Image 1 (cartoon, helix red, strand yellow):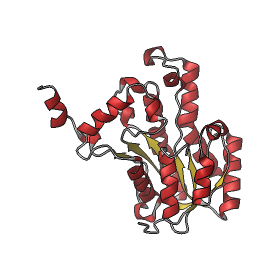
Image 2: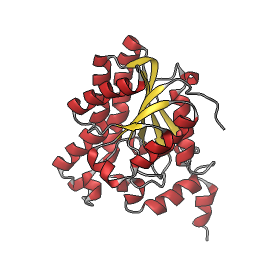
Image 3: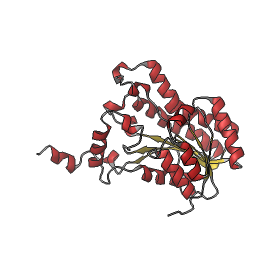
Length: 270
């Protein structure tokens, strides 16, 4: 059911790879809620996914962009304003990649070239997107930027490797840049710490299925789905959250606040 929460708003959605992507679900929900937006992803990711199908479904245009490239980001903002006919009201940062994890390199033996690549793609890209946006003054007053994260930035998950450190940096950028952007332009910036979610990226992590089931049994509400995360992102894009900024918000069914659950404890009594 549409509530027209984003009626008249313009946006940029990054990272939609396929129908399992959270970014894909956000695009569908934003379209339902009346927004117009452009879709963007790195050229290599676009060749792997099915973003054209999403563009057709939502009546959106696609602008290829490498989020680590200032030139590409500048072009993205310039073309987005031309296509959408004005300033941008919301941006979803759904960009993450760890070469160390892909190549099964243990955290304690991290390849530092891979590590730096992961930082650039997954965290520094947010700083670059915000910096260029601020210089170009492309985001409207009380516009909203949301980046997706995971609570490995606060707790240790051995299988999450260097992405834990990278997500911590992403969240720090949100707070630091959120202060300056809010003070000067009234732009709000938040991260959403989502439950383990069965996306193409998440499922590629070794042992993911076991962890998904563990988190689901810990969370009193169970794991939050990609669709539910999309709903939450829409609320953060909307005018209903105009005074929320610089926050890392847990969207995880209560997992982050639960020390232990009886479901898990009972398994040790068998």
